[in-house]
Amino acid sequence: MTKTLTAQQFFQQFPDDDACLNHLFRVRFQGISHCPKCKRETKFHRVTGQPAFSCQWCGHHLHPMVGTPFAKSHTALQKWFYAIYLFTTTRHGVPAKELQRQLAVTYKTAWRMGHEIRKYMAVVDGDRPLSGTVEVDETLIGGGQKGVGPGNRVTGNKAIVFGMIERGGQIMTKVVASTKRESLFPIIDANIVKGSTIYSDEYATYRVLPWRGYKHETVNHAAKEYARGAVHTNSIENMWGQLKRSIRGTHINVSPKHLQKYLGEFEFRFNLRKAPHLMFDRLLMNFGK
Ligand SMILES: [Zn+2]
Image (cartoon, rainbow, N blue to C red):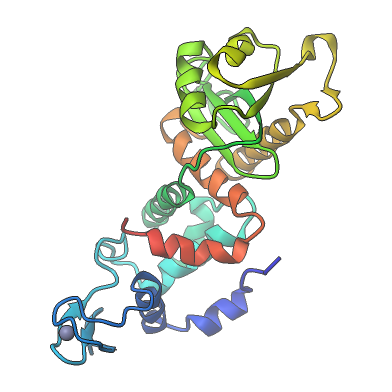
């Protein structure tokens, strides 16, 4: 496994805003060899005093920050880079308080930065269909967690999350309105390739899966049966455990409104767990898309 940068390596690679802008240009205009305006083979040089690069022949400008959250922000590019670095190197995400302290920005700025980064994590992760053997399960998240004060009661405010995990592969999680067929089946149909094998508990909703083109095996939790050979839902139950610890440990309480974004962040990290060094550039590449 290739390692992510240490903090020291990060500051060596990105000592200032210029180094960050050069990197952003390379990542967003990868291998650009011809000018989009004059069409000639060219090199782009940094424009002094502007966050832009210009064609050596016609002077056409390229702006690596345009369309990204960096362009509208008063926060230095290096601080953004460091925030992204923190997000891609922690196991559980970065609370706004922590960002505020590490970047020396206001809490409001830190909170906004965190939300922007999370939003793009969900975009980058994309939603490639799952296949092979897929475990599915549903769980309740939020509401009544520790740390929620009496003036901020969230009892009865739990969100239902439906999860799918491809054995040895990707996860996908969605906030759903209910665990009824009309809520779950459109998600299953859209995201699990027909002919795949689905493992679930014996919840009635899942019983008709064979009629929808899936092979289906169940584990009978009511009868204290947790695994029958390869048939189990341990992967997804472990994933729920990680997700809940992650939310509890970092964010105290996530409102249902924001939950899908946190799920996106969790998926991004989980799905790139075997290639964490790719997270940083992959995120930069997609900022602005
Ligand atoms: Zn040109």
